[in-house]
Image 1 (cartoon, rainbow, N blue to C red):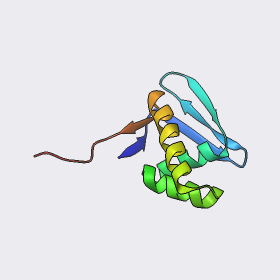
Image 2 (cartoon, rainbow, N blue to C red):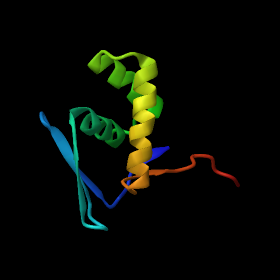
Image 3 (cartoon, helix red, strand yellow):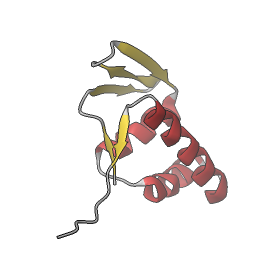
Length: 91
């Protein structure tokens, strides 16, 4: 499961968006597509669901959307703006 880090704040508008890492005091400007991806993450969409949505909204091929979304999510994860959590529970 992919989630926005609890130390991350995000704003979204017609021009794109801004992500703020409040723990490290860093700010990142996003274009509209990047900001839309973060918005979808906030509603618990996962990477394949996000890629499908981006493909439909922006009229790009599903293969390109999958590759671009995965690359963008890796960048967010590297900056500690999102977290991947294992949903499997072992008892």
